[in-house]
Length: 242
Image 1 (cartoon, rainbow, N blue to C red):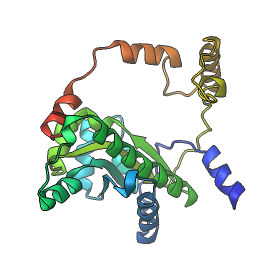
Image 2 (cartoon, one colour):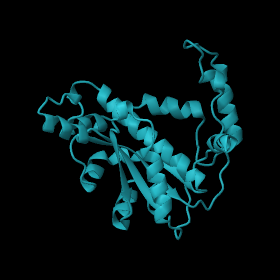
Image 3 (cartoon, rainbow, N blue to C red):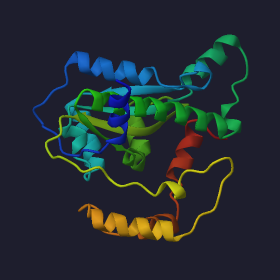
Image 4 (tube, helix red, strand yellow):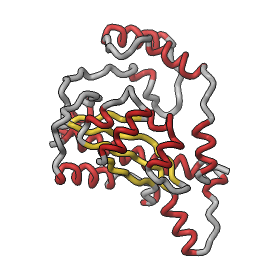
């Protein structure tokens, strides 16, 4: 069983094409949700929530904002993982104490981490069931509209979505950066830039059709563009940042 788990984790791949007619059973969905909810969490705070999106009209609307991700409606179910500090705001209100989460970014980082841990547990559970998934970060591109559509209260932030279904196209395991560029022992250690250049060559050989640029060029372009302030404004509106 131990080796099966290791193999499952090391053979992870992302799927974007799903059988539109396949439906998860109630048991499968519950197993995924239960696995997600058992993820590590800071102080057992469980500072996240999970939205299970089944309504086809909501899913159609999500795709209209994200036309490059049709799997949000074609998959069996779409989950949205939320950093959720509303629950503890209710606690503070009940205990009649100040609620000062907006004074620092740290509570938001903790809640986001809790949501991501739950999401990763869900991904692993999905694969253990012989199904596939794809994480969707682009839901933040329309963060205000999505918050209104899904009736998100203050102190709540949508981190990422997860499309889950039965894959209809097999995918190869995508190569990762060399360990020497990612894993450090005891202290952070610099490494030769050639490791990153080698990864460009590796990914070019891998030949993923959806990638139109080298890995280095993709991120050089991404992080040289002006950063959107939409999320910053949303966090302030949600009282997550002062």
